[in-house]
Amino acid sequence: MQFALFPVSLYLQRICAEKNEWRYYAMSIQPDLFGGAFLMRRWGRIGTGGHLRLDQYADEGAATNALAHLAQKKLKRGYRVIAQDALLFS
Image (tube, rainbow, N blue to C red; front, side, top):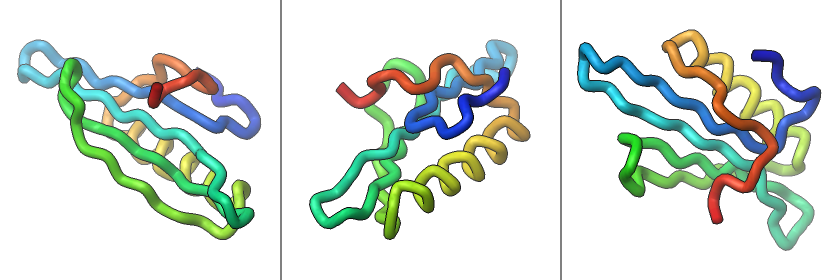
């Protein structure tokens, strides 16, 4: 699947029933109050709340670069893009 030029959110899944793997990885860029941006990441087993991590970046461009870099790593590990630029953390 082709990414949008500058995606602000991605939802990825890796499902392998033979290995009992049902994983998700969601990423979203959120602005902060001081002109920077956070990369919000949530991951875990599908159907659970999973883990949450916030990484702060100087601006939205740096957060977007980090999102794209992490997405490429996850795609190499067998994750598939399910949705992009959607509300992921509501």
